[in-house]
Structure formats: C-alpha cells, structure tokens
Length: 42
Image 1 (cartoon, one colour):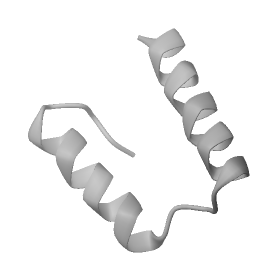
Image 2: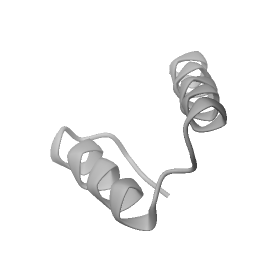
Image 3: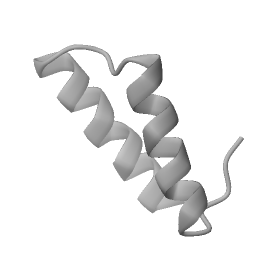
C-alpha cells in the first residue's frame, strides 16, 4: 500500500510541475472521492 501511495504522490507532483498546483477545491474533491471508496485520509 505504501508503494501505491508514493507512486500516486509522485504522479501528482509530476502533474503539478507541468501544469500548476491543485487548488484547495480540487484537493477537497479528490479527498471526498477517496473517502467514498474507503481510502483512509489524514
């Protein structure tokens, strides 16, 4: 599981480097989607 999380974080960092940082609203939406499928958050 830890490797999947690291891979996901690396993917987000790469995307942000090419585009721009995710907005608080985008991060909140992603958090809600992860909550909906049972992925634990902070």
